[in-house]
Length: 141
Length: 426
Image 1 (cartoon, rainbow over the protein chains, first blue to last red):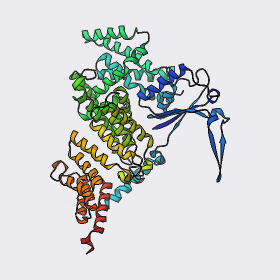
Image 2 (spheres, rainbow over the protein chains, first blue to last red):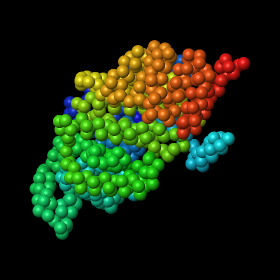
Image 3 (cartoon, rainbow over the protein chains, first blue to last red):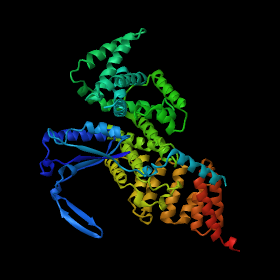
Image 4 (cartoon, chains in turn purple, orange):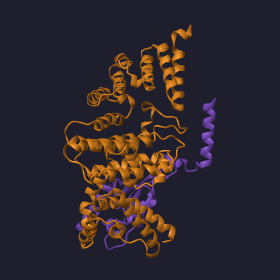
């Protein structure tokens, strides 16, 4: 299963403060580990929201809003797309990540990506069995 | 953290750490079976202690240190202790446990150890089934139950397969090392074969199957990606990864919501996973950049890439696909490759040229009961307007396939031919 792992923005990231060399090295090593473990599918760092835009939808109307956006903690500064076998495994990998803002406070959010199968989440074993039965009946004809 | 949460965390740590743990231990004790037992002992210790003490900051190092202590105990306790074991015990104690930074010492070797474990798990002294089960167990960190469910086999069968495989490795004194020189390429193809087999087992899963089966695709892909980093200079490893990435990119598009298979040309290409395609093409580039003659996986990946690059079926570069099949047929000649080549030629140079190649396969005994031969022939005949003959071929194909959905599809095509046949109109 896939997870999107989002590094939340901080005042520093929003101010465009670049990470220290030490952090860059630690992050580089961490990314390398993710690749070696076959976990990382993709990952990017994002520019501050001051360079971003939002398009607001209101019925048929669209309005473009310029950054920066104020609610810093809800913004994201970067993301990975991972392939792991469970949420617990994703958590375990996130715990191993260097603090993205070194001594400061920061947060990483993990969200599972919908897969084709997930649309069958409501598909209980009973329903599945029922479908199997139907299929057998159909082929018997 | 509640006890359940801790158990789930331990489970996740185990999945991440167990291959490295087993690989590191196997280097020390020189026996994959003992290495796995020791790793399991460390897991049991974690299950006992972590709910009380909490998960340590570096769980991997904790497991390794614990397993090494167990290794020493194991050698000491063993009453039939031979000199070699005694020496080994002392050696571990001296070398491994006095190293101030155990982790750093381990990290240096861990990639090599993992690669050794890959080669040993896929060693030719083992049957293909044994290699597959052992690889999923030792490198995938899957439980026996999970492997059994994935392969639709009873659990004791898999358990026994794994026990026997480990015993064989000990009995045959298979060295814990990466093969060199001339042996390397044969051994590597054994590894790649196992990964591709796991992938295909998952890829052939159908709707309603146990969810563990499709998981095999992900696991094979993951192991392939790991192997690509362990052996980055082997073009065929990247070739296989490319092939699996591109095939996996179509998984959402290849089955209809009601479970019918959808042929490549009828698939909604908007449902193809662009991320996996991009990764597949990148892996193919890595294989190409290493130079040398293209191996069978790289060639198959290059063919898959031709389809992946085409945004519509009409945009497919058939002459290029034919050229790639020509190369593949020269390298690994087989009736199946030939049949695929015939399809490509039929698309590139017209149905008549394709039919000539298919007809040349008519005497091929290995394809006697292969439904795709009459199916392809029927398709080409239909394109040539020879509907009566085409219909007979589709009927024959339908009688040969064991897949119900495929049979329905073939019978539908037969009916289509009947409708267009001149003789049936009379």
